[in-house]
Length: 188
Ligand code: AMP
Image 1 (tube, rainbow, N blue to C red):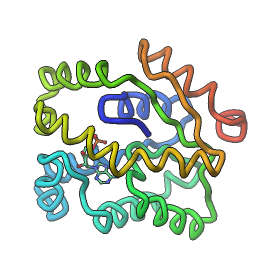
Image 2: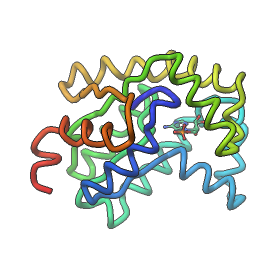
Image 3: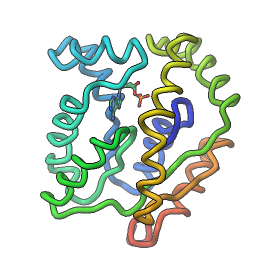
């Protein structure tokens, strides 16, 4: 978890590599669908371009299908999911059906000014259609309204691990991996 610009995607890639498990990034799956022109991509695009969340029903169905794939059997890292209370509930059901559970929820913490600076820089280098200044602001608001409440939910379940997200990619990766409980990182 983390606000837009905290480095979720970057860390998901390097941490999942370190743990040898797949990273499941809902943002990437949506972008792939937009690029491929699928029906899901078409539906998702207008929400993404406005900085809004794609409806839970679409997002949950997509994650459910992905978690059922073979490579997720020995573990997985979710990047950018769940993002709403309804998604937390749906994920609970999916995991219980799969006889699985979360080992930890990593919160990448980066202060707001640094986040905006990073996103504006990314806008110049990655050409994402949702990295314009207005949409960046809206995405921060949506995070505060819909996703920030999940911090307390996972804190209450004793799963939340706060990690300082400022630093070189490898420094942050090392912080994330060392902050994971033994049951997630120890056997690998
Ligand atoms: P990200 O790459 O994680 O920043 O996601 C990019 C965009 O994809 C978000 O701004 C949302 O429009 C959409 N998205 C990604 N994950 C979710 C999710 N869990 N729920 C709803 N929308 C999502």
